[in-house]
Length: 481
Image 1 (cartoon, rainbow, N blue to C red):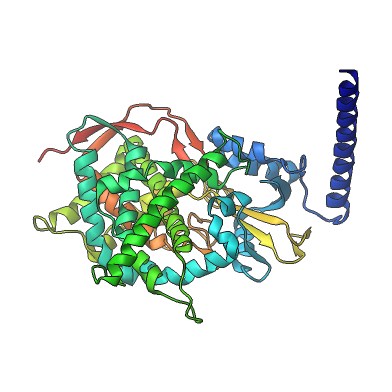
Image 2: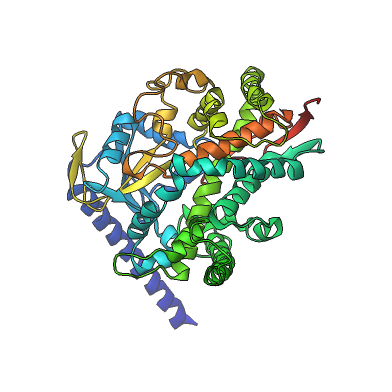
């Protein structure tokens, strides 16, 4: 027993010395190799300030991490350590402009290890290369001209959604219903999948997947990362079955090569005649489904929240939408012209996304050393932009906590201040798609109901997207015919 005790004691001593030396080396290397780094602290190796970064979101105040450090260091750029990486956080419109304008010049997109591990086929090349491929594929389907033909389908899906999930109910949970709507719509338009039972089979794991994507990559049972990997594997298996059936249908002439994004991915080849394999397609569709429904479902949820809280805003939206509804013949679906009339409704949606941005921010990686605001940013460091650094900043939006759709009238906010979809070459290619699905949701919502919140002070948590802690229960008041 005694030799074992001394062996353990020696091991503990060696480990302690190793950690101490590592800490000294880490601090020396990171602080002194570049004496003109931005102000801030890197914290402990690997862990850094990640816990504080996430915990502010869990407490419902993600902007606190940013604004506390801006105030502490009197600087619009500061250093930190997030997700195991030394990082510089660039704040304000100038920071957004710098990062968005220097894509593929000074910076490139960066995803945490959690993304590459949850989407494993991207490791065959890299997440950067896969993202480039996707951005070449999407314009055919996501540009406004292409999306116009989908508005009627969106309206049909929305009508079915409200008929099954909202009508003839006294109260509902908005967030799960909004997720069901956006996910069903994405499945219909991306996969031509219209069977509610088939959609339901792999819709539930998507929240686990979203939480795992941007998380500390610790693969232990019970962690968000572990649950995200399990959810990803389950959904991927379901998608592979759909892909194989579609391949068969294409070969037999039962499916069209242009009917949706899935068919397009199956038939398109690169300049060398090489087509994507099934696992690559499954991962790309998986990413599209996450991007195509998760952020929009949050936006729809918060639209309900603010319309319930602000009756005068609701009245203006209702008036606009009912003018459109009354212009339609029985059974006539929404069209592009109707969408163009929903100007006030879209201003409301934009103000919702300013106050509760579905995309909290994004990461880049420095391609080389460069100078920003007089500070050196080392090659390989990660860079983070935060929507809240402008959305909640009174310099850009006076009285930032006040709900005011008029901010988006005329020319709207100054460039690089309103960034719910990012900006520059990497602006979300699904921005127009999101606009359409949100406006179709608003139209079908307000023409059917008024509604009251059942929990007046319901807490909002960010994990990694903002969501009402209890799912936003509301009491419905159907309009009289």
